[in-house]
Length: 138
Image (cartoon, helix red, strand yellow):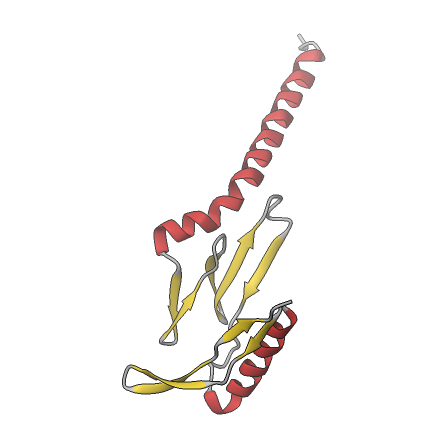
């Protein structure tokens, strides 16, 4: 004896409803990955001997090129935003510092900040540069 057509259709609609519900829950929970990561790991990672701050809401994943910072927004995995991925080569002062300083100074200027005179400071047994920015009045 064949089952009434209504039961398979009803079961299929129930399964579809469950699937849609699970997807909606996942889309709402995934943005909490960043804050959850911060609870477990803190606000910094250590990479190549450098202590790198991780912005609020972001989390760090591992890739072949090194750590990658991600921020998941509502709608993930459809819309993820990459924050930072290190180059294949670790930071080398001779090669990278001037590009770093110029980039930071340019972006700060666009955001209304001005670079004060660069200072050399003591960092442990070594020395380093301190780039200090002040907000332009306006």
